[in-house]
Length: 102
Image 1: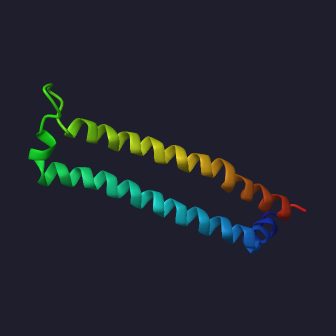
Image 2 (image 1 turned 90 degrees about the horizontal axis):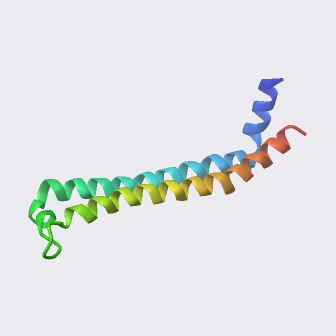
Image 3 (image 1 turned 120 degrees about the vertical axis):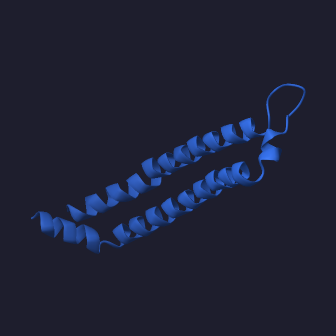
């Protein structure tokens, strides 16, 4: 019975749509994160003078707000992914399960 259910789910076109959408979205989000993170790491490696430049009369350099920006970017794209996963992906998954268990 379980194999039959699994076969029905895999045969559903909505399942193929879910898999392709989720994979594509995951790769896009991964690429964005890699660009931001490795961009920061490359700045640290090759442009230390820029990151060490003071932002004003205080002690804060450009490296601090950029580093905080990387952390905030990570939190934001995680939230965006979770929101989409909990709405669009979960709705599609529920439709697939409903159709497969008829």
